Length: 223
Length: 352
Image 1 (cartoon, rainbow over the protein chains, first blue to last red):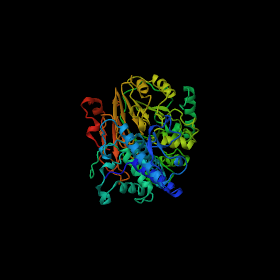
Image 2: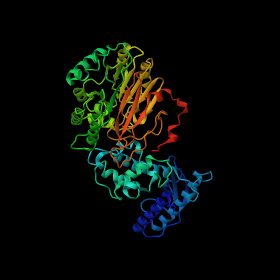
Image 3: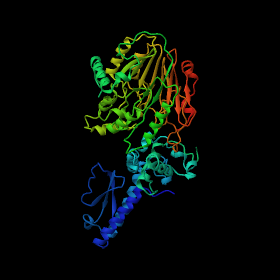
Image 4: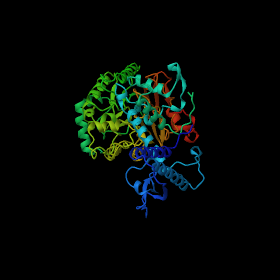
């Protein structure tokens, strides 16, 4: 099942935040608001200083000016004004997505909307951080007690063949997952204590091993 | 940083090292009398030597696993009947170059019945730049003659200095060098000073005299990311190329590994501690790959071996993989096989 896109979630949070703040602060009706347009963040937005408020969209690259009443121009907005601002921001966000993807979308899993650069940058950064932590643990002897670390037998995560799991591991007498073999290595060559499935170190090592073997075809059960 | 030494300095170092380690008596019987001593001689007298390599010892209180492995090897080699003429230790006696590790290694290798020929590896070297290793075993670069063969031992784990500028401590430098897949590492070299020494050493050796070169790194270019690689390999090969029969026996790669470049034949050796997977590219076609090791058997994929030196100066190389059938790479096969007829090693597996 696909997940909601990160920008949508962030925008929704922004809107809820605005509503909550403004309702708590004022609680009175507000005039209708309307969008004054959007420009890239690096560009100046002319002629809106007197009548609008400027918001940054969740792509991190676009800003939007929204016309609000004098009373709403600074400080916290009323609940109603914040709701309307959020609605205008949603419209601008949709336009921005459209403008950024003039060609036919390739990734249809997100309702035909391609990933933004910011989304992809976020994913890459998060994955990179997780893999680096796995790399650190994989190359550190602290999982064991005898100085040995995983990389000594498995340089660059090789000869771990994570793409063959699950498989019946004869020596373990059961169908094993990669983590079962990781724990076997920790307990035997490394002479350490095995990790629980929920241990962040186990997850990090799994991430590094899988990342190191990217591109391999998954063939569960292969020996 | 490359060690710079002149030929005179080398001889002095050799002499000092030899005195310190009792190397003179060690080399007794090898016809050792310095690098210029080689003279044209008759064909080789056939003989056999054994090798033990890449023990990667920690101190015994931390790790008994690798101690068990090298002790098992020494027992195996001592059980050979007849005994080999000598036993080459191929380097990486220690894991982190520490005094206790090297002392333990020497204590164990002192139990070898046959004469011992020592070679240094990067795990022995980069904590104190080989100081304690040389105190124990003598010079790291030398040559000797044995039964008509000119034997050369190199220190082929020299890398450029990448530790001074970032102010790495000796142990940080050692750990950086000990990490096989270190993306910030530097390629091994023999280096200009040793190439110059090798040129001079071989200048007195007739071209028909068979030569065996012992090197920790492979003396060719297999896979740079893991330093299965010698960056000045072509220059070293050029020095060896005029000789009619040259064999390189190298360590470091922990696997059955065979190559032929021009007339030079290359043989890897096994580790006593653990096997390494074949790199995913660069494997020479001459290599008949050993199957992937069983992780549930500590000794699988590991072992030791022997080298049969033939009357013509060529060698048959034997790999004694524990628990498996011995593997022999014969001189005849390696000399005559047409490389173009050999399959792509990455199509025949095993797959890592």
